[in-house]
Length: 136
Length: 149
Image 1 (tube, rainbow over the protein chains, first blue to last red):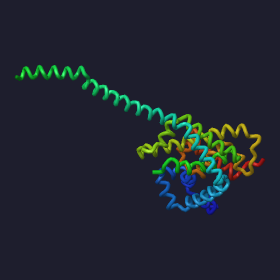
Image 2: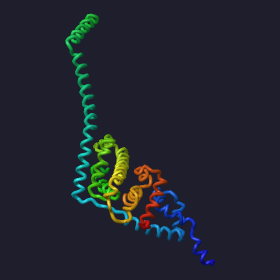
Image 3: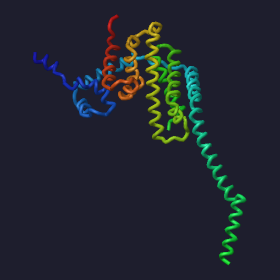
Image 4: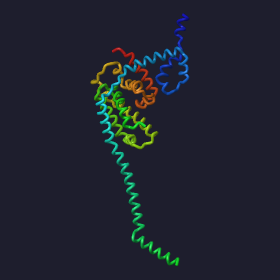
């Protein structure tokens, strides 16, 4: 009787082992449980059983592979999808940049033109003559 | 830094496998992957343009790549879920896996084949992490010990 109860008296933490293995391990949390598993035979056995179960689960999940020619075909189609959309975004940005550059160039040209216009040259000459008379 | 074309070469077969796991039909699975890309291209074209751009900050690029990965998996999941309902009468595949619901199949695939984290699966499936973990545990049991038909 005692022997039976001892056999049934497994570690309480062993119930948490599958959850730790499936979800908490990846987060790096529950380090106390990880350290406990390293020292507890019950938990180690539960972990081993659970790992075997996961191997069986993995085998039952299908993993279809794409044939090389289908892969090329699919990638080509995806590339075409991207190409059909990207010009719509890139063009306005390029257009905006280009139009800003054109605006600045035109503004600079206007400024330059106004500085060297006939009126301005007349004005420079007038100011120059006035300054010459003052300084004389 | 992994360029976007190389990334797509890597992720496209993975997406196809995911779609095929949910809709066991070669052409349907391929079409789902194309449609998912189309949905992203039209839904968030700026993300696609950023990823295709040559000069992008590495940190921003990594974030955008992860965002794209989650978005594309989400699209594949949503499209497959809708099509699974439409094609339920015509799709027949052997094995206990195909007897599971689309949500169960998706959670198992993303966890065990795609190797995604719980938070990523939760984002893709639009469910809280607690629901996803419950779904995975139940789906594992249902897969190993299928109910007699």
